[in-house]
Amino acid sequence: MNLTEVLLESRLVAIVRGISREAAQAAGQGMTDGGIRLMEVTLNTPGAHDIIADWRERHEGKAYIGAGTVLNVQMAKEAVAAGAQFLVSPNVDLSVIEYAVEHGVEIWPGAMTPTEIVAAYEAGAKAVKLFPMASMGIPYLREIKAPLNHIPLLATGGATLDNIADYYAAGAAAVGLGSALLPREALAAGNDEQIATCTRAFVEIAKIEG
Image 1 (cartoon, rainbow, N blue to C red):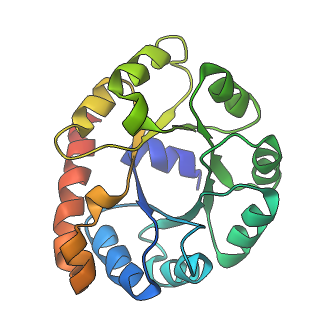
Image 2 (image 1 turned 90 degrees about the horizontal axis):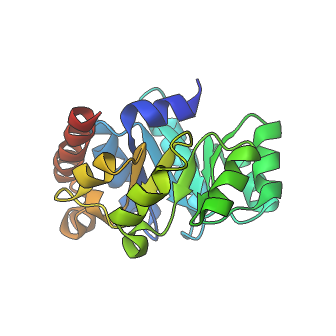
């Protein structure tokens, strides 16, 4: 399965950072029940490789599991060994992109400037994460898509239920979501049903805007 196709079809990536392995069980269950098809755990999360392995075992056939904050080739290798099916980074590292392409692993590197975005795309990334969106803002996304409309952009940072439609309208091929998907009280209580309800609302908007 070409996971960039899944990305462009589902238009959402769930990003989990800094939670426990136990909390990740409720998070993963709630998000998959809510319809999320791409889930990423950042590698600066303690026990990230264990969470990746857990999610692969629990959610095989329902969701694809990736690793985020992949900063070098060694991290990429370790993530893939743990079961990561796609890689995401906050930066453009050509050696990481090269490794992913050579090994048939989808990679969506993070970039901010037109130069970085084009460099990542030409190096083999089929989609590029526009980061940090929360700081750059929706007008920046709209402006940068004008000359680069051939490159799918995964806009990450700052999206909420109230503004995610604006991300799509400005040209985002997909949106990366973190804390907005995981209400703090639901995560603390292990309430996967509440997480599923929250997730479902985002999934429905993504379908409408698609």
